[in-house]
Image 1 (cartoon, one colour):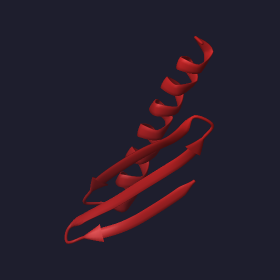
Image 2 (cartoon, rainbow, N blue to C red):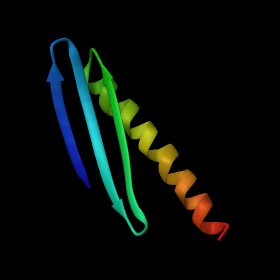
Image 3 (cartoon, one colour):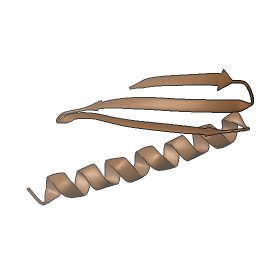
Length: 59
């Protein structure tokens, strides 16, 4: 897992890349608060992982 937290002017940005068996999952979130960005990033990653898990179970 690779996580990058950065700031561009007034935007707090959180990015993450997860390396999984069949490739990568990438998500990015930004807001005016870093905690909000990280929380949103976590939600996005969870949704993508669940989607990937469902796809793998159907094959």
